[in-house]
Amino acid sequence: MAEKRNSSRVILTITIVIAIVLIVVIWPLSMIGKGSVAKGGSDDEVYVRILPVAKIEYEKAPAAADGQPRDGATVYQSVCMACHGTGVAGAPKAGDKAAWAPRIATGTDALVASATNGKGAMPPKGGNASLTDDEIKAAVAHLVGLAQ
Image (cartoon, rainbow, N blue to C red):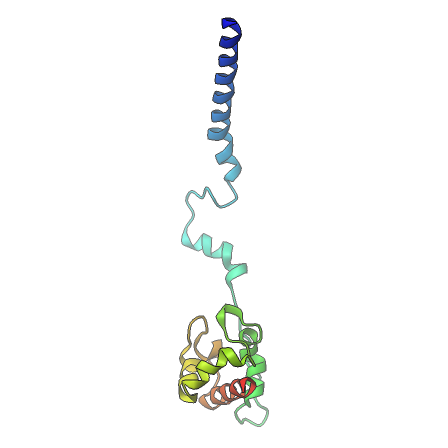
């Protein structure tokens, strides 16, 4: 009986030793390439790896053919709709009266200032630096009109 108990302990000990060796040797090797074990690597390498996911490009609104400022609907369609159409990054959706009510209560000047200077995830001028002040005011008026 004592011999059987000793052989059970030996088998248990060997099993534990093998499990520890596997965890120590194989597990870190399986994590290489998954980002968990990243040795070395500069910030530039990280930037290049995440660039396909993190890069956002905004297209410029087409210029009016007659040289006049673009109307609010045109600016909204080409610049603002990318975020305000879907609510991405916390942007209030166009036409959502509940989301826009507190913003509209701050006044048109505050909304225009937010659109011009950027707010939260929204970059200045919605990411289109070519927008004029009149075009921003027209886009804000269009968005406010959609929410009323």
